[in-house]
Image 1 (cartoon, one colour):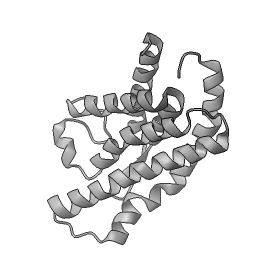
Image 2: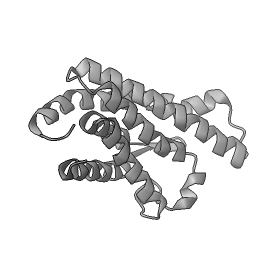
Image 3: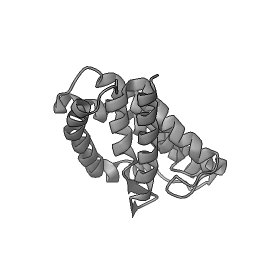
Image 4: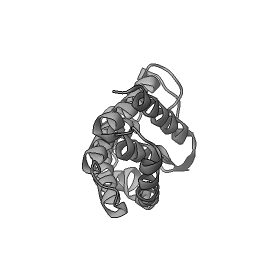
Length: 178
């Protein structure tokens, strides 16, 4: 990996951390801009670089840097929202893989949608495991789907639209990304 791509990888990891602090509380979790930067990492850096940037972000939070929405440290794995942090890594990889050869906003939006599906496929079951298994809350499946996914879909659609429209321009202006 080139030095330039490593710098962009670190930049997108840092932007994901910043995105955690731009938040709107709703239900059990919060709306943040983390997925926006995850999607951008996948589109701009490809599957490997995108996943690496998100892995760096998660690793830094787990070692204690307070870069998650509610802090950091290894104990964060017991937070209901931690599955969504884990899901950022494969989401970026899927987005990067599916958007590899396209600059079409529609194709980029579809790739981001697939990555979002991966994010929810990891995050919602993890949330159920922590809330119902570890904390014993007894939350029903419809309530989990509402509080862990459905309420966020309009905001996620906006993040996907921004990514699909902005990244083709960024790809043209920034050389050496992919």
